[in-house]
Image 1 (cartoon, rainbow, N blue to C red):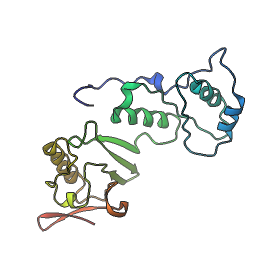
Image 2: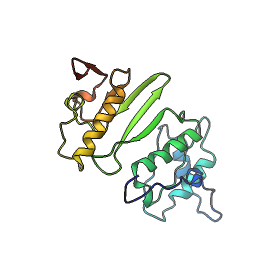
Image 3: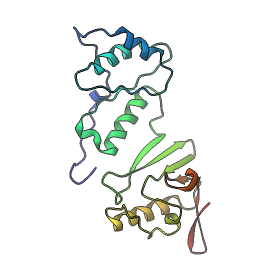
Image 4: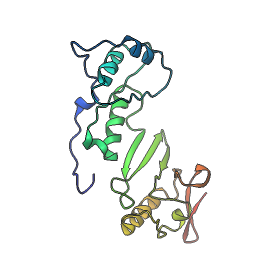
Length: 197
């Protein structure tokens, strides 16, 4: 959580599918289009008051065979990344779409307010998505190298060093969106320095 917005408890009602409202205008063509969709994720975008919740509630009440529906209702205070992803993971876990322990959002302060790293786990395997906390493999080896976008360079450097100490010499794969070829590798230590392999 950011200093401006302290942590608040999660509201379970935000992950509950709202019932179809009495008197709602039926939209069978839109509901049928949602049922016919073969995507893993569907986003519905329309201005306020155009019936998004009504259509999605009607569809979610009977989405079709072998379809799981995870629901998250958001408001303007849910734009903080940790809070947002916690709601999403809670909803996905609630319908059995993911194991609640497979994805974890980790605070990575220093780059921007609310900056996160994401850890993906399966059994003993783990991968760490570094986001913008480490912009290139050089920063793995030399955590003191700063990025121009770091709002708090000292805190960003501390975060990089903490994360590298945690993964150094383990089987955890690390990678970032700015790494050449979106590569993932391991962090090894030797001869007084770190190596990205």
